[in-house]
Structure formats: structure tokens, C-alpha cells
Length: 188
Image 1 (cartoon, rainbow, N blue to C red):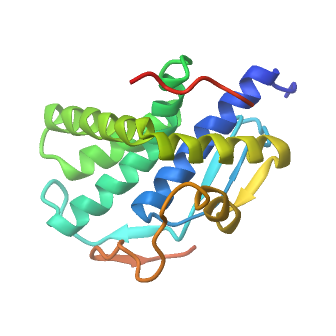
Image 2: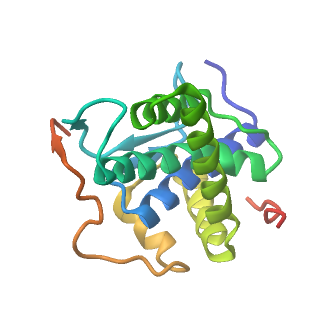
């Protein structure tokens, strides 16, 4: 695979940084982010432990729905950042994963589509917050320099401008673990 142009590298860094910063804010575990290109993508976020939902489809509990909602917002943060920077809503695999989660949470396709769009708008609005966008910018710059950042490094960088809470995880749904540059500010 050929090396991406500087614009593509910067785009990938912002996209992955947005996933990571929103993940920290929503307290969704992840391991690292990377912009080391592979055959599949220009960047990726490696999530924390893989979780299995133990509930009926199309009628999740409130806790499970919130669990799905947070993960969908993390997935949609990358496309939202791309949109804010004028690159469109890039991130086909992010949209596909969010769509699958929406179908898991909703009874109909129409409800799932509306749920997905609503969470995209929520992620977009979180990224429009000046401190959140500054954290994304700082993480993206560090990611462009190093190619890969672990969760502790991302937390340290984002924590310079965001009040990140520590302690008990907010993510306590009924699930069971099964493994483990300078760019313009977004317009308001």
C-alpha cells in the first residue's frame, strides 16, 4: 500500500483522535489509536475488552441501551470530526458498526436510522465544544508524530484541556466480558 499524502495522514489522525477523546469523555474503554496504514485502513482505534450482550434483541434494558449508545457515539465521532474538517462523513466501517448497534437497540429499521442519526448529531455537538476540539487537535498532532498512542498517553494529552474523571467506570451495563497540524476550528 502506498504512503498516504500529508492531507490523508492528517485526516486519519483527527478521525482517530476524535474516537479516542469521545471515548474518554464517555468512559468507553479502548487500548490505543494508530495511523499506521494497513491494507484495511489508514487508521484504527483498538477497543477495550470485547463484551457480549446477554439480553433479548430489539428490547434491551435501559442499561444495555445506554451501553450501546455510548459505543455508537464513539464510533460516530470519527465521521463527525471528518465532517467538521470538510472531509465529509468518512468512515464506512464506523457507520457499519454503529448501524449494527442501532439495529440491536431498536425495533424497526426506521427507528434504528433515526437513533443512529441522533447519536451522530450528539457526537458532532460534543466535538464542537472548544475544549473537546482542542483535545482532539492535541491528540491528533501527537498521533501524527508517533503513529500510535496508548490510552494512558491519550488521557494525559487530553487531560491538559479536559476535566477527565478517574475512578469507578461509568460503563456498568448488564454485559459480560469475553476477552480482551494545524487545522481550522470547526464552525459553530
